[in-house]
Image (tube, rainbow, N blue to C red; front, side, top):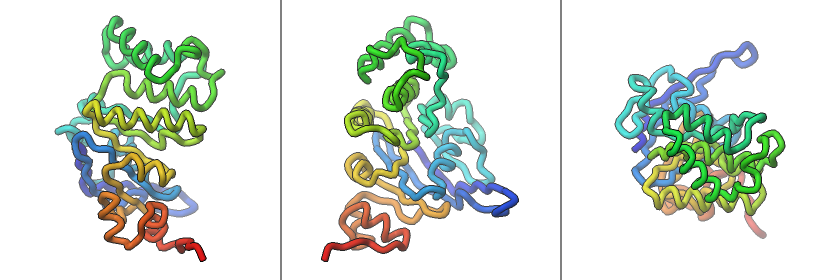
Length: 249
């Protein structure tokens, strides 16, 4: 469903000069799979997701999403995706229901379909109590629910979620995690990044660890355990980054 092939993205600044933020990154995400992209801050996770979602152009390499190439067919790629960015990108003066209506029109959906899907998602994410409230008056969890509902509105086959539970309390994070599992049951492919090791271990069919712009390893939990000799994902992650793993005395 997603085939990432030798992606490279270089950023330039006066302080650090040129650096490969994404450095020859390749991996595949299978149909109906939850695939986790893990890495420390600055590892290249968000840039990789933005390249796949056609928000950035690669310097070289490509990715194919459900048969469409990000370089040759960016508009068709976008039609296959629901993308949740780390900053949510919500309009503070609009209510969640108004945001869904606005984006539904951008997606080219009919008014009846927008209304039906909006109410389905408002019900699914328990948003009824605040669906008519201005978004700038909402809590972080309420905003994140709104952002995910917007991402799902046009019912895309592929979802790219950049740290979907970041900053959320445990009950709200649990709701989002349950939704990700339901997305897979509904036949969708999910690629998401996270810093929460327990979340990735629980949700993901396969995991890739990225560090300094390069993929260090890709595999199932069993494959990662076999490759590193570590059991918990937190230990595997630290080992791959060359950091000491704390052990009990």
